Length: 290
Length: 277
Image (cartoon, each protein chain N blue to C red):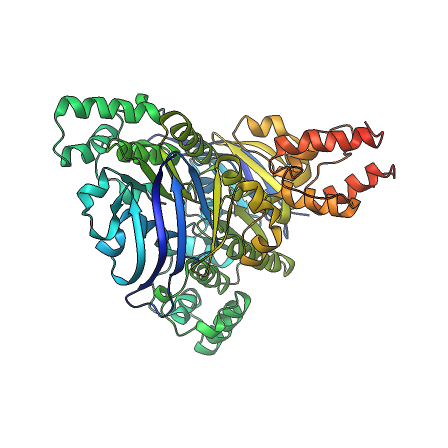
């Protein structure tokens, strides 16, 4: 698979910042990957997204070192118009992002500004709404929607620009459980069916573990960990030390295995409830409890 | 014992016609630590806003400390019931933390030494006394959240309603916030906290009230409520992972599991054929 996002030796300090927000980040994302980014407040997660979508250095300036490329475009020397066709960003609070009254206008806004012909815009609106399963909301006023619906409108409004990479900055922190479920289902479907590369920042490690191919853990501007969800979960001590909440299933299994003197390996560690049930059942059967 | 909060057939209809509460009946005793959960729009926030008179019942009655809230002034209720908004920035408006926390007591007409004492006490409780001269703008969101709590605490309310105290915070800040609330509960405050974080509910709440479509769907101890997996699922709520895992073996785990350490103890006992306590 081809590399779609490349980050090399990236460091950044905000103009008025005393300490660097990012220090020597290296990252390679392949087209079609689903990447989760987590870490405590102030770890540099939003700054990293801003370096990938061009908000840094085009909007926020500071001391930037290293290089970021998106689909071959060098972000620092490309304009927003070029970047907009490659990369779309969805923020934490959907209300912050919306500029229109109705869902349809919101989703049409991006392509209209690019001067796309109206019959093509119509196709894009339909496809974007269908991909997030909100076609039935097309005529609705945004103000009447639930948080999960609004966030899917925000995603659709970005999808209508046909980006290859979707960045999302903590898109579910303001949502209720239904909304969170709706957004993560949409992301997973967009990734699997439309092949869109997803890079999502979230505090919800359990959701990232279920959905991501790879998880990055940032702490104090540095990449503290990077790997598959299973590899990350095996480093429970590091996760805890940087203040990331470890999934309960992982915490339990590691403690149980070490109590029983069983080896824990990448192949034996369950990271979701669905994976843990058969393993626990096997242990009960072996012990003659079941 | 007389309940400190009592809602009797409480209805609320917003001016736009939304029937947000459809006959809520419940009692809360003094000193309880209650989690209020449910989807957005289920009536949680509407309910707690009736406790200090921010909203008035369309039908039915709310009593706090035996008094009909509808007969009281909001300013009088503020001494008894504190309400922390979901977003601290909707609440904070002064240009120093001291002024923010002093605002309530000042309006009670207290003397400046009494105000000082209350501000000190509240800021000590939230661990921000060293920042009392700072501008709220210069604080992190987690710190501003704690300023908002201190501003309510300085009124020394008996009942503390806290709306989604961990939203937008990282795990450590969220945990710290709830530990603070638990400490206030131990000091005698009755706590109602609205949240979507089921792990925090399992860890801190003694009782859980689940709202759905303006009605109370479930009300019981945390263990009783998290046992009702199917009912919770009907409103898209899922108990914590560890509770769900234990629930897959209903014949083995005698009671609802609420924490990893409970699960570990019981699992080890089961595997060693020891009785599970």
